[in-house]
Image (cartoon, rainbow, N blue to C red; front, side, top):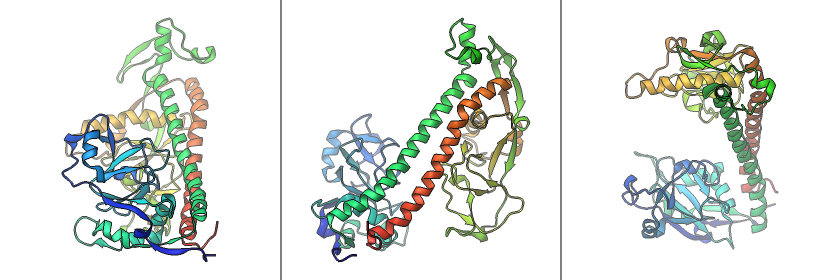
Length: 424
């Protein structure tokens, strides 16, 4: 199966291997509003450089002075200090044609007549590739790869003929494309649900339109559900006949339980454990085989929030997982749409976070949660909102579940394809 594969050093397939600039070459004060984007670690989470987080920029003149650190489409970027092991290539459809790598990065430009960047990147993201890349890491101080440029040149990789490189890259790239499509679709769906919520329940657009004698833009039967004036309440102005209710009147709050750290592992034994650091990624890396009788097993679609430092509410898009201490879950009563609860508790949680900024108190306690009050509209309005937002919420969870399945398939295929164990 591998008769046409050969083992080559990176030096044999490289046009160029070079370091990023010196630490003093790029500073905050050198950033400009527009110019040449600077790649940092946040852009290297997948196999392709990710443009979505946005960039800091330096001027074209500054980038010209750092010409050896300029990278183009097709170049492969590595991190050599800090979060070592990151590797991604700049795709041909990247937002920009030219970038500058940061001080903690170095890059490889392949000779495309011998190796395509997609395949080389996939190899270095495989367990074998990661092992070889990190074999020369320093064991002292900040994690780093010693002499990264000269060391990279010596690494040997298995290399199939170009047609097979392209076929392997196509198979795995197709999976990545679908995962990325799901991510972007979920961003759009979340924005749609958030925009509708803001219009109806924050800005009170239908009420204000009726007060001004204007068309609400809603179907007549929906517009008729909204009152025609705002009234004062302890939460400020809210639509007439809406009620101010405590959080416990509209939802059950489930608090995380303590789990013994002696039972933790990162080998996938037992069930994953949701910790505060997992809320943004929805990808818990800590597992426990402890079956906690008082614990709560969070399901995809549940709403979870941190209680230390990070207070935003999230739709949990990860797999079923235990709810760890310092994390809580909100379960809406049957009359309250799930998306409505998520969005409406986000405001008081954000206010709590702003109120605690600059102080040493960064803990959200049960006593704080008990003080949360919400403006609740009539049931008929909530029913219409549920009909509109419910499918969006369910699609978000389904997309995330599909992406987890595709990621598992990709991760299983990756080492076998790039080693030649499985043939395309």
